[in-house]
Length: 74
Image (cartoon, rainbow, N blue to C red; front, side, top):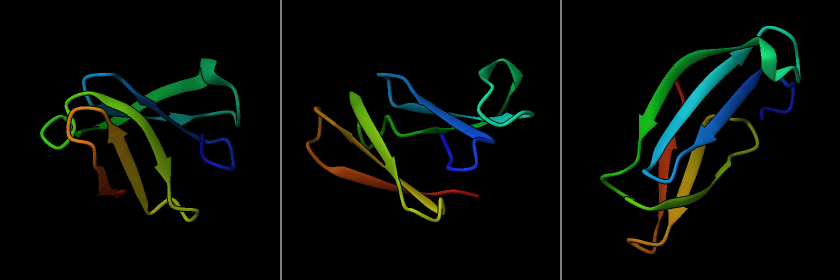
C-alpha cells in the first residue's frame, strides 16, 4: 500500500503484480484495477516485493532464480 493509502499492489505466486487505485484512502472496497506487471520471466516463483520510498521503483524476490528484479513504475 502506498503511504497515502491511494494505491494498492498485490503479488501472485506466478509473478504477476497487480496495481489498484483506491477512491477512498485505505478502503480496499473502493479499489479499481489500473494495470499489471509480469515478473515471471525474471522470477517464476515470486515470494515478496518492496518499493523504493518514492514509489518510482519496486523490487521482486523469489525462490526460482534467487535474485532481486527491479521494475520502474509509470
